[in-house]
Length: 128
Image (cartoon, rainbow, N blue to C red; front, side, top):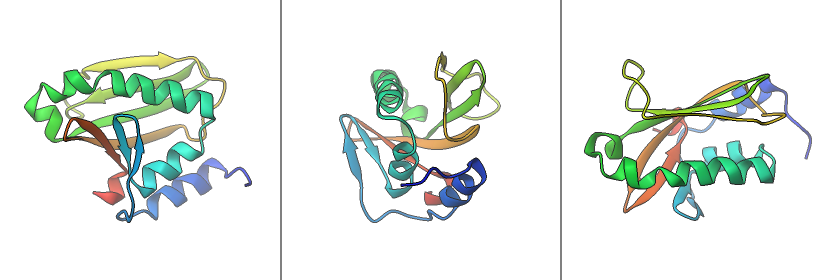
């Protein structure tokens, strides 16, 4: 598999408009699009990111608004990967973490999150 440029990866992610299959990763469900996105991240970094997200499932589940829909924003800069989770863009995030990663395949990406039967479902905006 060849590495995709960031521009190519942005384009690839925009092509996902639904899902045919769900992928289970512990307490997290991925769609075709989010599975593809996470496949572009190193195994060790992907594990750290998904464990961090899974850690917040109980907190998100206990908030009816967050459980219905929330947003995970990934922003990569030279200092690392900033991950925020929020109800909406105009409210303070419920979580902000910076992970020291040496690389990340894309500088900015947004995922939608939903709690489904106690599990975190992650989808790309185009899959909504």
